[in-house]
Amino acid sequence: MTISPTIRMPELHQVTLKDVRVATWICFFAWTFAVYDFVLFGNLLPSFAADMGWTEAQSTTVNTWVTVGTAVVAFGIGPIVDKIGRRKGIIISVIGAAVASALTAVAGWAIGLSAGIGLVFLLLVRSVAGLGYGEQALNATYLNELFAQVYTSPEQAKRRGFIYSMVQSGWPIGSVIAAASVYVLFPIGGWALCFVVAVFPAIFIAIAGIWLKESPQFKNRKAALELLRAGHVAEARAFAAAAGVSIEEQTAPLSAVFKGESLRAVVCIGLGFTLSWFGVLVFVILGTSLLTSATGKDIDFSDSLLILMISNGTAFFGYLFHGWLGDRIGRRNTIALGWLLAGLSFAAMVWTPSEQSVLIIVWYSAGLFFLIGPFAALLFFNGESFPVHTRATGGAIINAGGQVGAVIAGILVTASLGAGVSWNTTAMLWGVVPTVIAAVVILGARSLPPGAVRVD
Image (cartoon, rainbow, N blue to C red; front, top):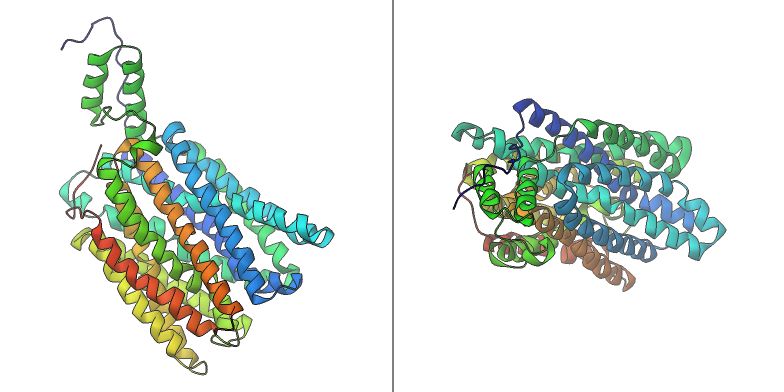
């Protein structure tokens, strides 16, 4: 095989350590404020429902339909990013979160004018917020590829998961900011003001996206494919080999992700992710509903926000811990252990009498520590489980699976509450049990050796 001297070979795209550090910080703040908007809706749902005159079952039904829209949007962004690039995908996600926050602020006014049209408007707006939720899969894909370029020594490779955990810790930080903003802003301007304020950080992050550099793996593979499509087969393969990427699989990412090594990851990680989101829906998104309900923990709304802030602060350290542990015992095993302990902790919280508020805080904090913390390992594990060609698509499918789990859980929670089942029993059935099952299912995924670096 010879390479024609008349063909001008493209330059290998590379990034520096400084580029990666800048990208890491931008991705951290982007995820933090995307979570802020995403969690805000769940935190404010009891007050929003009260203004609209909804029952508990009606409010969870609305949340379920919102989750359906979020899943569709989060799923759709993956194949697009495998086509247009990681950098553009992140910027689009941030802008989408800002638009969703702005339009949510006027949703109540729209419902007031016309309940039916206003409700459809609310569902569409909160579906757009799926772009913000989908950003965590994009961040994992993007940073996984950047880290593989600069953190190459054995010592650096063993810290990649911990570094990524600091980015993913934007979830509890964003949740704390959301709870704190409700605590401060709600008495001043109600739920609408909370969503208006959420717009401005997202705008700042969208501007900061100018400094993001495209993933070398994505850009180099794209250059190799352009050579291949131009008929320069030898040159394309030589360039791909030099870049450490594969161009053998050329089918659409949405088709390729259900073949070969990608299929096992989609099934095992995806199913585990889906089941874990039963717990996320019950104990995080609908956490205020569980805590304030008379058939739940029967805690005052203001006190429940304080519990959420304290518990999510604990979850921040859960991210760091599980990111660190994943670098040592493997990410798959870390995820399974965390979710098992999360199920046991939430079971203890549900069984704790309402008057023992200190114990409720302890068990709730432990539950969030072990439920949310493993996502730092899981999102990075996603990136390691797929080749470049299907990495964003596979990650998006798994990420959207979380919303599918939330939809199914929402339907089951709504049915339970509508049938007169208490919030405590509902939380046990559709929050605790699926979380424990998720811990078992994830063990079916292929485990990668700690410290291994995947560059293709």
